[in-house]
Image (cartoon, rainbow over all chains, first blue to last red; front, top):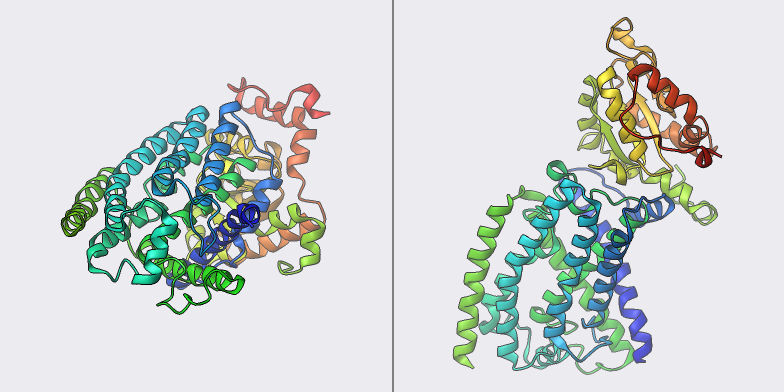
Length: 311
Length: 185
């Protein structure tokens, strides 16, 4: 069973991530009053990228993007998708360490390419990661303190019996803070500073073509999945649905229904994020940092104080 | 449009994906670029067919040259074209890249783009309407189906000839040849 989940959960993440990218392009198009591409357009793009020749700029250029993709795949294994979770040990601490592999790999590859736009993009990527990881750390510490555990699976299990974290008043402030930094984690507007095609020629991936670009697209899909899934797992109760699924949890039907409920919750969060993405313009990097280090950090910090006081 | 025919996808996925995922580098040389914003935004919405603009030539597979090509801008055009990964397609837009158009006797404008880089198709007109772009794209689909959009292959086969033409115009070029002798064969 465990070996099967090792393969199933990255596969689900990949398929759903690609599908979410397609859905997001379609919804953005509908908001612009356009018809929009078909939902499988990102898959077509990936097939095209794989069919093209790619230019390599050295061994580290290839290695960096592979490292980033592998890091994202490993990250998926630590994440409960519904009731599936291949790696139950480690929990949030391992999760936070592995989250660094994604910008690191892209930075390695973009740095070797020696394109000035890549270098600007990498510096922005690290600044943005630095800015959103401070509030993220505070949020995760608040959650871990409140539930008295570092295990993601256990956090979801507690929520199944006592209701979503977002509805218990102690974790409302960290939840709001996470939602405020969610666009920065997903890399969409108003925090699209890293890619910024009109400004720095799509930043770190300016030199990526062919297979490198295909791998990057897959990695981006996985990264999007991770950002959304972590929010759903911690604050929206993972697979739980007001206690309706509790009696059949553990059975095959329960697992399948749990995954479906989980993905629907992710879709709702994604669509709310897309509305913000479609309406707002882009921050400059210093504005983004100022915002991220001010409001979400403040809210998360107050949340952490409240949580530690009532514990 | 045969985007939904699964048998064709299974037969040749690379070709089908190249047809329905044009990532375009727009080279804004002349007035032609005016027609591009309406075609990619709300009114005509080129993204229906998977056509989106990208920022760098590395990620692109369609090169759209919109308008007259002066001698000075030909250098970046050649370098951009050489940076795009195979398979790649070039479409020249407007009458100027075909035969010079209204700049036919200008001292600093080239009259025929096809002498310097291979062009897969032309969209004639001064200016062509956005509808003409879509008609051009459908023609390009047909050419890809019949394997006739082979500009990138011609560039490799006749590289000596193209390079000679470029050197005739510029004198010495300040970048090394893209293909060496062995690569051409």
